[in-house]
Length: 234
Image (cartoon, rainbow, N blue to C red; front, side):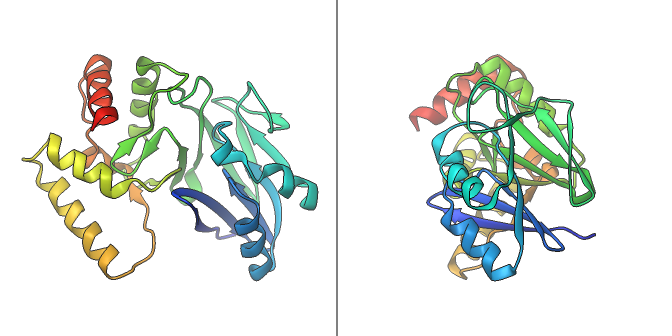
């Protein structure tokens, strides 16, 4: 059964809906209302919530959705509101499709990503963004570097669905850091044209991130830590 992936905006967060037949799953529902409205319009039932980490802007809608719809909630260990703790190497099933859990700590100590090979898609939360990565908060730079390398090793065509839309700022930083990178300049120009035309969100790919994301182009964890510190102060 073919799966449809829809991006819902909540501030600068993305909430993702995975929809197949009459069933739906939600990734990182920071608010309940946009999810409930989208599912009502599509006539689908929420069966599963996937959480990449426990920050409130990714989990704020979970309690209301679970109370109203009785769906199950899967997320990393170490906190609520997940009722099923999942770790890297595990596999979940939804609508006949396998969802691989990847351990990607760094932003926090327990982040996970959800890889759906059948749909060439990975949901990366606050670990990997389009042209950027998340801040290192309760995790460590070495962990984040290892996590980014793990994501960068996915197949080239894997579509990247990150937790926030910081793409313009990230590409402007990438162009500042690597002014000779023609792929960065091309991607930045394409994004500005798309924004001017009011075109909808489009996911990037792992291949595109390897070409244009400065954090994936670091040689080692020490270089990554220095670059992340520059971005934090930029």
